[in-house]
Amino acid sequence: MKQGKKREIISRMNSFPSMSGIAAKVLKLLDDPDASADQVEQLLKQDPSLTANLLKLTNSAYFGIPSKVGSVRHAIAMLGWKRLSKLVMAACVSAITDREIPGYDLQPGVLWQHSVAVSVTAEGLMRELKVAESDEIFTAALLHDLGKLILGGFVEEELDEIEKAAARGIPFQMAEQEVLGTDHAEIGALMLESWSFPPKLVSAVRWHHDPDSAPETNPMTDIVHVANVLCLMIGIGIGVEGLHYEPSVAATKRLGIKPTQLELIASRTLEWAKELADAV
Amino acid sequence: MESMKQIVQVGDMKVGVKGDEIVTHALGSCLGLMIYDPVAHVGGMLHAMLPLSKINPEKAAANPYMFVDKGVPVLFKEVYALGGQKGRLVVKAAGCGSPLGKNEMFKIGERNYTVLKKLLWKNGVLLKAEEVGGSISRTVYFDISSGRVTIRNGRQERAL
Image 1 (cartoon, each protein chain N blue to C red):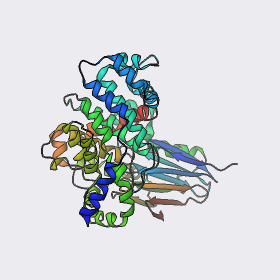
Image 2 (cartoon, rainbow over the protein chains, first blue to last red; image 1 turned 45 degrees about the horizontal axis):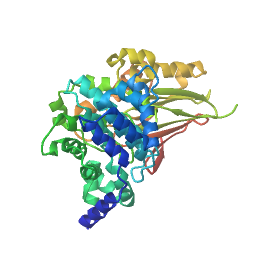
Image 3 (tube, one colour; image 1 turned 90 degrees about the vertical axis):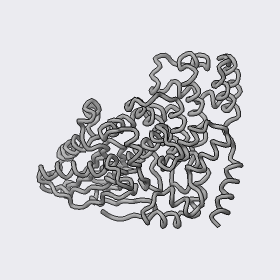
Image 4 (cartoon, each protein chain N blue to C red; image 1 turned 120 degrees about the vertical axis):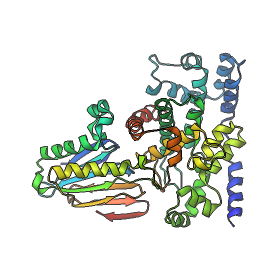
């Protein structure tokens, strides 16, 4: 029965509207060393709402650009190639996470705030821990809960069963697995895989609640894991499951993080997240 | 006077008088502290995030309410300023939850609670009621006319 449920969830996933076609093309261009700013600008012109969100994010206090950016060309000049691709992604995510997520009891906009908060927390941890800088961490953090968009409806139908399973003391994503045959991390990873995202990023999303079960551990997965729990603890994007997840002892050891560092990042997270989340 | 519903954000504090309602959402590991003078009908609520301000003194100077050690004394002072008296105050605590498992680093909720208890003990103040710990998210409603505190998590609601 569980397998049947999982098949149903995956078929729902396959009919989920993919990210804006323009966004996918822009991201591909930004990966291409021969692409020109002109090409990016021409492409973005075809999606005005994506462009509008992109410019709003570029002008957010988080990036601290002193003059107001009013055009894609100016944004490319101020942000550079790499950061522009992060912001294209953020503009897409804001468009799909801004609604209510049933099942998880997340009000409109809350998943967006949570996604942004985990992203800026992950970047903060990366700097604080002096982990090799990676732009993928921001994107992985931004997309870690993508699966909730699909799974929410199914969680809503089976909430009593899932909560009963979780009440035995297992983490919420394991309770989802037990009742639905899959969980929001797995579904999110499958979606990103089908959109041809890089394997390391897919893995960070897949194992964001259980980094020790990943076939290969890596700092990106560990950082997204820690950033996610921290943001839930301070109430950003906390839903029906509360804090019913288990932070890995091994992951914090691998990262070499100290309690004071975790609290320092927590004290800054709210401000960073607000700067970016409120822009759109 | 017109009654008001006030929302306390994370790292914030609000006080109110008779007729007001004070609400805070999404208490995870944060501390929610409610104090009430049943004679003067004044009260206040703090939503503090971290135990000790020494972690980020600059932030604490800008916003004492983010930290239990700085926020609690200011909450009491603000309620005294509205006519509250120490000997009459009814003090209740909520929140201070933790995720599952044994990772001590993430027990910020427990550390918030410990710092609160020490502060109250040093000042001779007792907690009248508390609902702390566990892995749930709590919303707290505080009715300043009656002093009634209600906690909601998911579909469940109860008086504190």
